[in-house]
Image 1: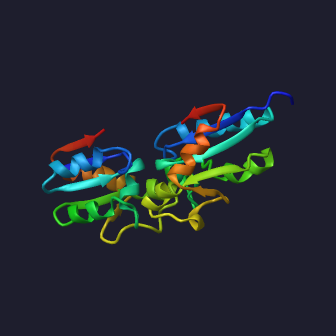
Image 2: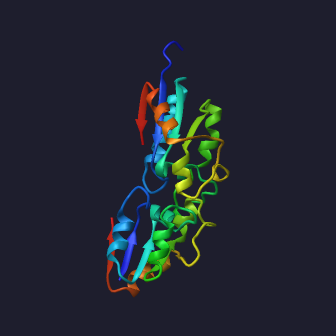
Length: 121
Length: 98
């Protein structure tokens, strides 16, 4: 592929309360199918998307959290979590579904600056 | 009266605005507002302070959907959908902090 661009998906919403988290995942998978350089950033309430133990039977909604574990099968392996956002929510890396890179706010901002395309969810 | 909040506490001011107004009565946290009642979150102290004057409930299915079923702050009560309906009946009025 001659024209690989750096895509970052910025996830800032909690799952289920709005459709953003699910829609982001859909577009991530599409982008990965085109062999692009894909990064996912989780900040603010977006960190909640990665919380282990989601059980959605009671709200009769699809539990899409297992999809985050499948991302590596699509060669989407750059997952970044904002450290401050995680800690403000009483969470640690052990609470998350998948291995992530934990970044400071400064590091996250710098990474965002390096992208060719930023998609906001 | 019953106050109903459905927004997460750290990215939306709805719950804080509600707590500023509500002097007594009951609050039901649903949807993304259930995160306010999870241990260790940065809004915990404000919720605990409010619990001295207001009875706080969370909707259990929304807590479980978000993987937070085992993180509830002590003293917060859980309700199911029937319990939600009962709260709206037992209170004369409801305010939804949309």
